[in-house]
Length: 125
Image 1 (spheres, rainbow, N blue to C red):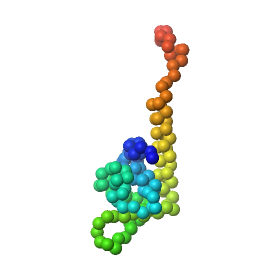
Image 2 (image 1 turned 90 degrees about the vertical axis):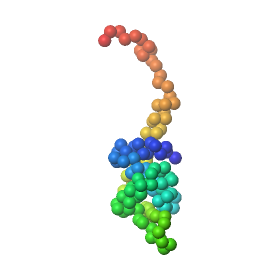
Image 3 (image 1 turned 180 degrees about the horizontal axis):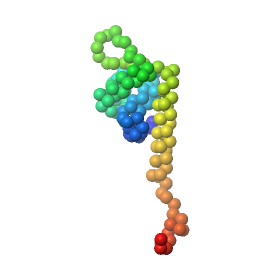
Image 4 (image 1 turned 135 degrees about the horizontal axis):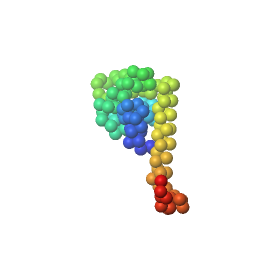
């Protein structure tokens, strides 16, 4: 799985808040499509208040639905609305994050090659 800090960094840069993309991608990939707020907090390793705010935002946009509970107050559950077209945004952002991670990995593992012209002293310029 992609490093969570890269998703958070990319989310902050593109969406203005790191938690926004992280929670959205996590919800998109949540197995079974139904999950608790606690599971999301544990999945993205961000503060509960940030995660709750982003989950509420996704509910407001129609990407998630609150799952009614018959056993009274306690854990809050959500169900992903799989056919919502906006999930494509999160899938595309996740794909971009994977490409960035691969690019960064290549840059850190492959030392730059030096050419003969790199070794020559600067000849006045």
